Length: 436
Image (cartoon, rainbow, N blue to C red; front, side, top):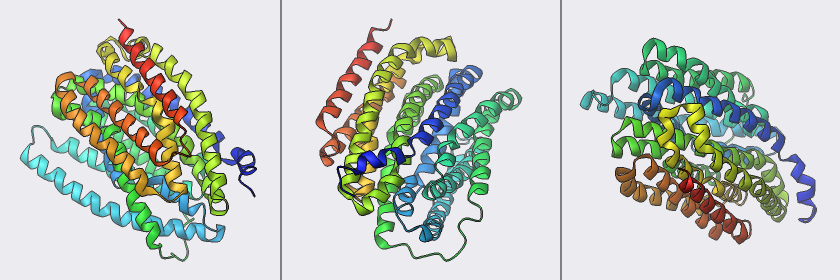
């Protein structure tokens, strides 16, 4: 198969349909999550809820040891007879890593409970730890499913998990207050673990092969990438809680970051579910896989940019209408957060390019640069601007990561795509600034 023919033949095989359907369902569930829960909890308690959710997500990502990219890249590219065994070997390595990391985090949580019981109460800390353990295990199960090409199962994980939160939190909050709301997070993670465990049960039996050294190195670098990516995305809420010292501002940051993260992950999911097919193609024709990825990124950009402008124009009024008037001051933070979304196709394509070309170190340079920019910018802006400062720090971080990705993969990420993203991001900021 030559490079010019491969994209036309393969573009239909990227499981984009499953990703699109899953993301459509996730959009519905996130709309409920970002409207029902804030209205029920109010800004202050929603800030506590968002902080707990951010800690669970950050911890899960840190323990992922490469995330879905490792499974999708290596398991899908292996011969069919070897895929289950390889997935099992990668899973066992990830389990050992996660058990050690969870143990360390549990010790840290215990120390915080003993040293600062007024700021870190024992019961909420225990609930967050349970949610973290369940969510980490569930994430591993769904990553294995993706490696075994069960794309539909992987794509619909979060719609189901989000709806469990939406249905569980209101009655639990009415019964036990903020502690009940946190129980809703743990319940959703436990539900995902049950579904994921049942889905892969019996599929990983047999001989466990030895994981090659280069694959282990890729997994470690990919895990570091995952942490650097999540630091700005989830760290914004944590930064506001630590540096602004306001539960209300933390609530505003939670809803602003939640909308931006939902949009960004919707784009990234397309590249994640396309990765198994890209990996198979790259094994026989790497240039063709690169051409196909470039074409996919271009199509995503064409769809995303006008949608982002429309979202920026409607975000403020919809936020007040759906989440309640108490969240009206969050519109500034939301506008800045949405300005980072146009760069999602660039960062998503960079991640896929690093995977199919086995260059996780190059992507780590881009994501680490973004994380450093976020930490520096957040340290300056958040104490002064609260939630809006966190959104500004996320925007600066995203621009840095996208620029670095464009430089590191110039043949895949064309200059005009970066220019278009910068222009649309600027327009989103102007739309937000013109809003009364």
